[in-house]
Image 1 (cartoon, one colour):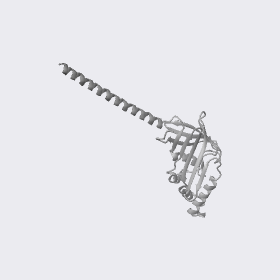
Image 2 (tube, helix red, strand yellow):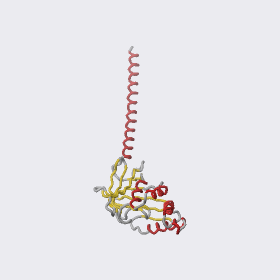
Image 3 (cartoon, helix red, strand yellow):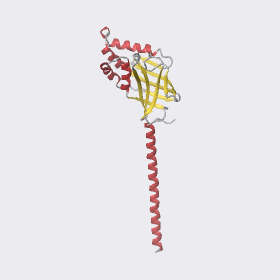
Image 4 (cartoon, rainbow, N blue to C red):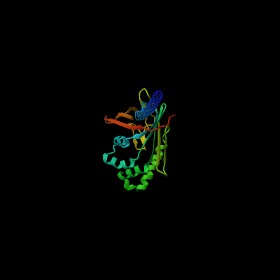
Length: 234
């Protein structure tokens, strides 16, 4: 009888141990899942600018700059194909923000040639080379940015470094912000300093400049970025 009671006690003790172990494993799994969810939420809803970002809604952003320059909707439709793969990067480190892009100018040049009023004066190849030269000349005028044009490959490289004012939630770029030499994101001259307001909504970083054109009408220039996922911790 005593032996049977001892066996029963040991059996209950073993069963209790299994329940405790199973509970610990389950809690560890729940903690891991909770940490993963928190990390995902943090990545999708960043609270600070620091880190790397990539552009979204590029065509909508480009449209605002194009229409300010007087580009008609039909003409913009021709440019869409040239900019279908256009991407920008934003890197924020301390008090500095750098927006950069690398883009092949040739598709834009050919789209431009298709609507040029004086295209009968040039062949398409001549027009493309002429536009390449214009990018090279424009790139050479920057003093604070890193800008270059490779006429052999047609690649235009642009990196604009600005300063951040966290209290005012503003980013200022001392030599403006432009796409090639053709479209600026302000109502002023291409290389005039421009200040963007910024805010983060639903995980998207908005840089925007509200201004008025020469007719007094409101104009908004806007850039949007999402955080680059799985950034390495430093």
